[in-house]
Length: 442
Image 1 (cartoon, rainbow, N blue to C red):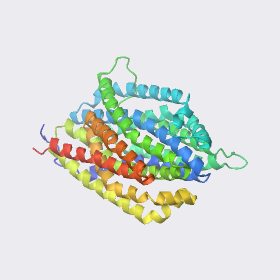
Image 2: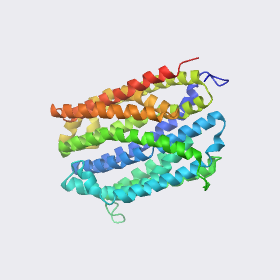
Image 3: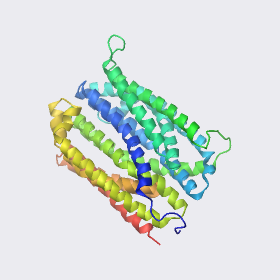
Image 4: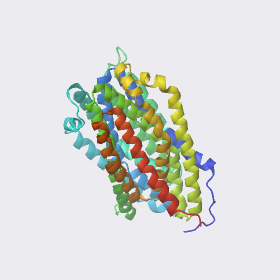
């Protein structure tokens, strides 16, 4: 492949045009989780830990089964670069129908046995009951969320991230407002629903977001959601790519599952402190992932046009930008260190445990920036088998042995976060090396 008449460097203006809305769209979901964590924390550490556990499981399944978003984004952006975007007209409606069916299946199946699921996290007693109450409501959101994310992938593939940003921010505002209203009530009009209120707030926000997504697609996108009976050949490609990414997501969530399981075994205060840390980690990840999203959108277009030199330059520019973002986040957290824990909890035991490990989350931000930058680039390039292998290797060969070794050494929560740090390092290094080896300037 060689560069044709395409620009030799993607301008920062174009990168920021895609990255900044992607950042705002990406942090909307973790902001919702942070808001839920803070609001539920006012009910008590038991409720906070239980909701955090149930929400983590819900997020796990969303991460695993929303990989079609990345696959359809890569296919769409590559066809855009090749000048063949209309070839995706049959793919998109069939993909929407597929993910809605998967969402309904997930909702029905997991609602049959939520308690055995949460017992795998070592939940018992009140924690188990509260987690089950929350999840039985929240599970109905699967088809709405999966369909929304898939169409977000289409938007990204046609080089637009602003629509997803607007939809996500509206969803965040609705969720936060309903959280406050339904959790604590508005006497005498609205009764206080507690944990159930938080679940209903999230579900309603997800329904509204899908409605808005369909509105934007219908009004803004030239391609139409018209179902065609004939199986689209691109759907097979999307399923294959999605399957690799699903295995990757399962491996990713192995780390979060065992981290949550060990934290649960350390007691309710430790679980609450771990929940706060995970939500901050996820917020940071989605924030950093904005520039990765730009790489996802642009890299597919560049490889479709044969612009390898431009692609390599894009990788360098995105790496530098994300390192600045990751370092800045770490510095902001350092400044906020004395007050961060008390914002989420009033329990002194939770605050002390969180403050003892928060510095590890700060330390990881630049490493996370490297990993997410090249994750995004390789997703856009459609190299899903590579991403699967790197994630499975880092989870099974680095995180799992280390987290149990450090648990046996008595490091408790610190051991979990040291393991996450090593896990992200093992993800970043191979991707950086392979990118610059495989995409050399001509």
